[in-house]
Length: 106
Image (cartoon, rainbow, N blue to C red; front, side):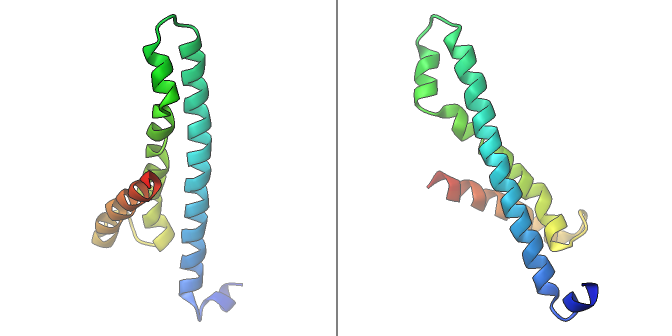
């Protein structure tokens, strides 16, 4: 298999980026479920109504979007085959993380 990918190194990079996207998506789904479940359990135990409004506005689901951005931020260097200390990774990682957050906002 190594020999077959030697003529198309972009194919392995594309696969790594696709894997990173899937991992970020799974992180998003799991984080939203965990944050919402925890917030609902805590809000159900209180008599105040302000926490119910926070639950209704899905604040914790939006906060959970930070975790896939962090996965993207730290994983893009590995996916692109760039060492953590190199300049390309340092410039590209924040751009991709911010782009992910902006796309998720829409």
